[in-house]
Amino acid sequence: MKTLLLLFVILFLILTTACSNEKAVVDEKSSQKLSEDNVFKGYESALDKAKGVEQTIQDAADARKREMEGQGY
Image (cartoon, rainbow, N blue to C red; front, side):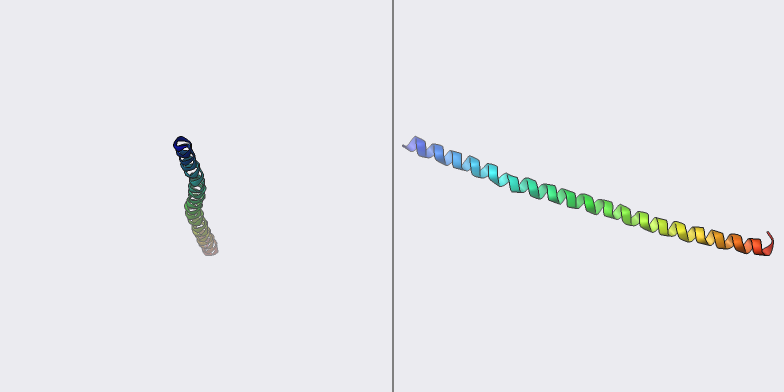
């Protein structure tokens, strides 16, 4: 009888340990995905700012070119 009780206790501990790890794996995966999203968001933001700067430089170069053409260069 004691052996059977011991067996049930051990089985119960194994099952509760196995089931408790599932949530940890799910939480780890979701936090990893969240972390990847944050990393790429920074890159996307920097890329958008660079495109804005590129457009500003291009507009300034076009204006300078028109001004020089107006002066006869």
